Image (tube, rainbow, N blue to C red; front, side, top):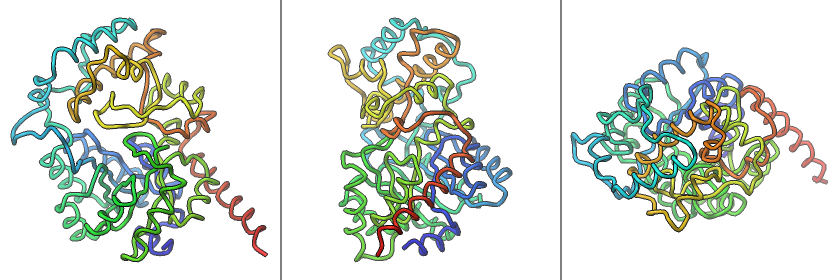
Length: 380
């Protein structure tokens, strides 16, 4: 199965780096890993800009794109609707709750964000099928070597277009039965993500999920399984591959790199955090997503909370607010620091410094080799 993955993607070291930062994607691929650009929330025009930059800086190395086109979304839009149309449906109770929460931490909830394009009311709604189709139009114009979908089975059009362009498809799962559905649908690679992972995740631990998924699909057809969830070191990578994974899919470890899109305040909080300092909460996106525990996550779980809205409405409420929080914290507002948070997994407790993405790849390779050498000592 390891060789099958190498043949699919033309890679030697199966370390996948999911990141919303193009600099991380390019740096990882150039260093011998496989960068995957997370395109959640971007417009087709923005995706074109990001992928063109990666093409120019990746030195011909392979990379992929991860889209977020949920299979099950409570709020669907009609053709022609905008982000502003969705925002108009947000209850006043939620707007007031956020405004009061920010005010208690010295953050002006009405502060303009002129350079924050994602709050533009004229943008297309996030996570909708129509937007996903337009994003695929862009992605397949570039030399991507992988296209992935989070939150459910990829749309049929993604599977068909990927096959036409000879691009393998990947999909994230958090349970054995989800993996079976994905293989039946036709995906080429399964990313089995344990509850330790940052962002949207299920409830089963990585240690249990990987062998469950591998065992469940091994008799169906050759589909490599990538392990995800709390993986921050090369030794963990070796352990997951010993359980049957063909490689690992990582995310949180790249948030503490010098190239990452995260703010210096958040990176400082990552270095100081323990593994127990994360929480699964719907307060950021409307779906359960693991993130660094903060005054923001506490408030949404508290007795005065109006309750999170369904996706994508909760994101429309939270993201501009968190932008204002981050900017206030960076400007020296100590009260605002308590609200600063981001999607991160339980592996955050293994972060003790901020280094470059290339250094992270090198450390993975070194520790992976050390783990293999240690394991050989157990073979008589």
